[in-house]
Image 1: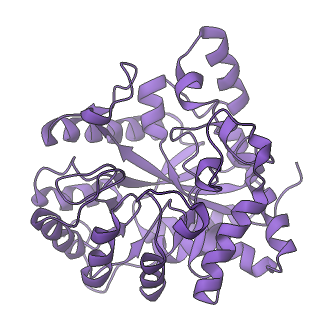
Image 2 (image 1 turned 60 degrees about the vertical axis):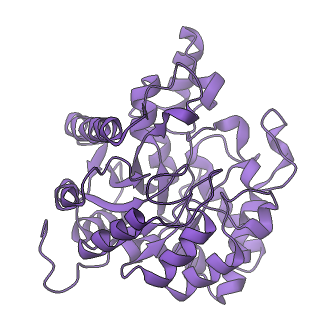
Length: 371
């Protein structure tokens, strides 16, 4: 594959969840992981699809940065006995989230030439510059994202999480004690409003992904900090009856708040009539370009749209557009954007620099780390 002139910043990858659930080791090639899982009879390909991720493929696709999640599912939404990263109480959620944090810390310490946890905007900027200068390979930079905030038992814990490098929190996956979520509608609760106030005091970025529309709209009106949707596609394009997607009112307010939306290249989230088990080649990367274009047209520019692949987050290679076999193929999206008139500068922003604006922004004056 020819080298791409662009760097990529992927805003959503469930790396620790996959490692602790299936034993996936992403320092290996995606192809090696596929071979091992099929030879050993792993359940991973059956329930999560064949992997799309591996460190060599990050290098080939020039994926310099990714948001690495801390994620646990509520026990009521457990898919089977194989799913170990679940909780029934906030205390159990806290143990799962802290276990995943410990995994990232051990993993990056064991493979410093492959993975690097980044804690500050300055580290993000320096890491990005390192990738732009000279030939690789380079470590992939990881920033922590908490998806579903049930692991936060007390708001006094937030400074500790900041010290660990957590930069962004999404209050929902399914419904939580903070707000409604995917498949479980509901507004912000009083505890949810208190969480947002505490997050703003610590300068956390708010992730609207999975939040119910009512909760998202209130947050957009009241949250004082930066707001994004790391992995969420526009409802107007998906045309499925689900609160998982972003309504036009939410998108417009996100644009007004100078937020960024990460498009997911998952076939079921791209077209209304695709279901798991259907041929992947029914969907092209051109549909991803259409989703990007829909948001760019609403905004009048490319400043507010990017990528949040969610690769290996409940789906694998069988469920992504025809042109993608691994994350190394993600730069192929550029040719479909170019056909729609997007310039090299536009693509550079969509692929990485829009997220860099959010996560490489220096802390506000007077903000002390951990304060």
